[in-house]
Image 1 (spheres, rainbow, N blue to C red):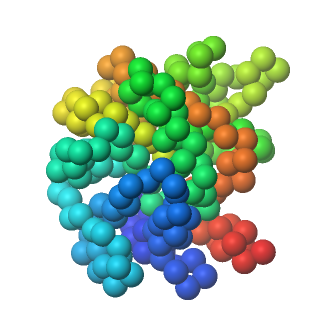
Image 2: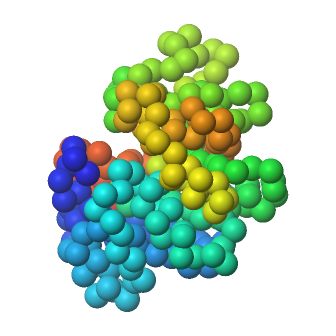
Length: 230
């Protein structure tokens, strides 16, 4: 993380951030194989000491999508790949199962992600909280760090994005080969590369995920510590 160097190893109540995420999803029934993908030897060392499968990836990866694709190239026997960003320490295994079930139930879906409700004005205006608007079928129209669609939310309750993605393997590999796009670079949001290239992203809305805290800043670490302690 350029905004928070060493973020994945940040201590939360005696355990590194990424280990909270790993422990939160390892019981997912729909995951056949769970891997920590990193270019950081320190993260790999911690993971291996806990008996976790690790794949070292190139330091040239510009996003989690590219890193996940590098791993997926070697996993030819999987149809669906889930990219779980390591800065989601409060994620639950059942959310991952629900995302996998989207692909099982809908063979035409190429890519999907998780969204939930925005609870506060602070979240609404926080650029680290990514907002999303969808079409009437639940596919993303746009993601932004700015408040969208507008403050008049009577017709479209505001929703935020959770950093979990699912892809058909072929879609993931194709996406990673595409050049960064103008809106992706402007918003600093990797999923806009898919949107700009016509890859439809289904947004699975999970109301129970509304209390999740994604870690983007040191202040978020303190919030998570308090929440997990309580």
